[in-house]
Image 1: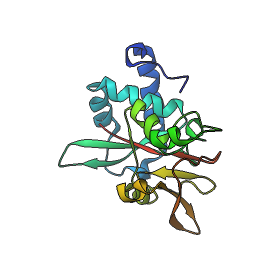
Image 2: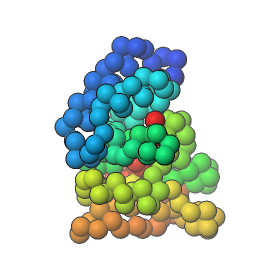
Image 3: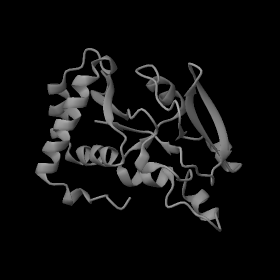
Length: 190
């Protein structure tokens, strides 16, 4: 992630620009978050600048983060990558560090798990991916790595999902594989 700035390099001007972008996206996509008010989301974001930095990383990598839920119990808003297709700035990556290490030739530049950790976000799991598809239709031409159960990963595999034929499909691949049309979608609780 060569464009990544450290949390200390994220200026107040950049924070203001990000908030404007997020607000605009929020207002254009009201169906994703019925009953949630932007002023409440922004107040929460301003209290957590580290979360703003993570949202900026999602934005830089073309994830187009937006609020899709509010957890009344925890008081947290859930931001998820809502780009129509899997984020362009995260494509052509394998699943995790072990997969990256196992490749002897033609290594990808990064892994989904490693990149998510650096960004301070979580990779969606299969259920979260399915929930995302309830607020829009995503990955109609691409696919996204999702959090892989340990039993599958221990056998060398990883799973990914996409949206085809009005359904979410879950598939498997070797965790070391990577494709130009596959990245990952992340989530951030604020």
